[in-house]
Image (cartoon, rainbow, N blue to C red; front, side, top):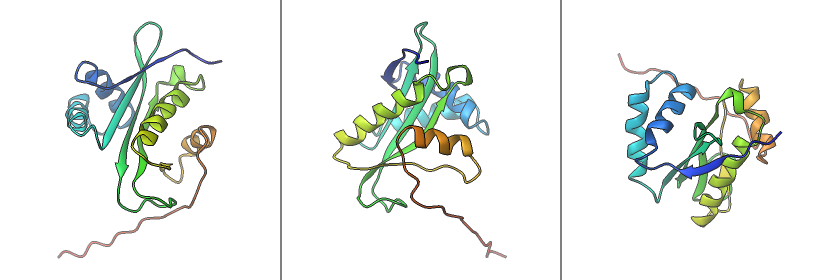
Length: 153
């Protein structure tokens, strides 16, 4: 089943809706902190983009954020590359094409900046994200485990 959605770029008028959805994906921060980050990203339209998906009733049901990364991105051959920084669809709208429509908008944005590749990442144990990435046409390129060692006294 595919749901018709309206994909719109985030602007000052709908940034609060983005902040509310971001808080659902990343609950360690509240919506006000997310709003500040969203507004900051709007000031860098050449390097960052965010889109919202709205259902037929006008409710925001998902978002995607992407940036251009000029540093090395694991598994890619080019620079810069588009990088999918965050993707979220409310549970009631999942598996209905909302995420696919959001990713397609980022693909268009990425191509429009002259990039040949769109990259992303997911935590090793996030099998749902791995499956979604595969459904959107991403291929897994490598797995990485990060380490740290505290060296201050």
